[in-house]
Image (tube, rainbow, N blue to C red; front, side, top):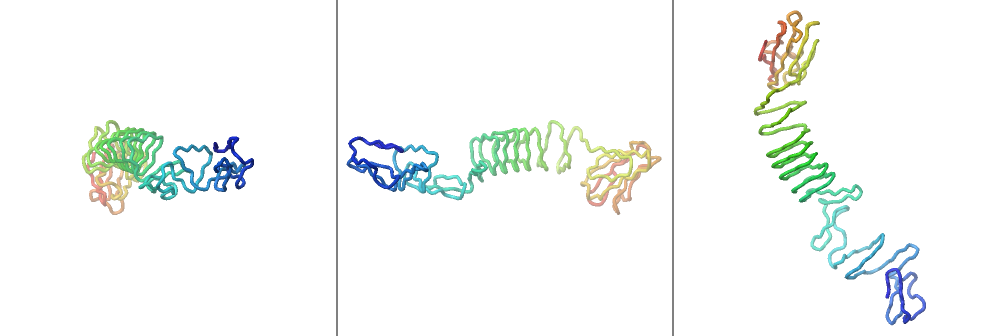
Length: 322
C-alpha cells in the first residue's frame, strides 16, 4: 500500500528500481510493478507535490501550509469553481454557481466587512460602521450608521445621520436627525433639533445658538445672555440683556441692521450704574433704520431701562420703558 509522501512495498513486488520520469511518485501499475508519471510528481528541493488532473474521493484529508489549484470542484461535484463578482466580493451560491456582489464585500487589508444593506437579528461588536441596518438588536461600544430603522435602539454612544424608530433610549446621540414617537437621551449633540410637537426636558436646556419655534415654548425660567458695558459698543446679534454703566462717560450702543436679528427678538438696555441722568445712554439704529420712527432712543433718567424688538427686516420698536 502507499501513503502520501512515503512508499511501502511488499516483498512480492517486482522491479528493484523506480520507474517513470524523475521525481515521479511511484504507484502500483498492476502485477506488483512500480511505475510513475509526469502528471504526479514530488520535488524534494521545493518540497512540492504536483498533480495534473483531478483529485477526487468521498473522504480526503490534506494537510499542507499552502494548497493551490487552477480549479476547485469542492467536496460535491457540479457547479462552477471560478469565483464570481469583482475582487473582494464575498462568494455565495447562485444556482450551484459561485457569485459575488459589490453590495457585500470584505476588505482583507483593513479587515472590514461592508455592504449596502445588512440584515441581522443581533449584532455585537466593539464598532459597527455601515450604510443601513435592519434588525432586532444592536449592541456594542460604538455604532455608526447612515440610516437605522428598528423598534428599539440602545447603547452608550450612537452616531447616526438619521434615526427612524418608535423608541430610542441611549446615553448619547451625535448626529443630524432624530425622528420617531419617543426619543430618550442623556445628552444630545446636534447642529439642529426640530420637532413638530413639544420638546421636553426634565432638567436644564443649554443652547449656545438660536431656538426657533412656530409653536409654544414654556419653561419655569428662561435665562438669556447677560453682558456688561462701560463704554461704547456694538449690539451683538445674540444680545438679550445689556447692563450699561455710564458713570465714566456717555455710552452709545450701536445696533446692527434689523435684518441681522431674528424677527421678534427682544433686547433690554439697562442703566445699572445709575448715572444715565448725568451721562446719557443712547441706543442708536443702523443707517437710515429707526426705533419707533426715530434714529435712536436715549436713557436720560438714572437707573432707567428700555426694551426694543426687531422686525427682522428694517425696523425696531419700543415695547417697554422704565
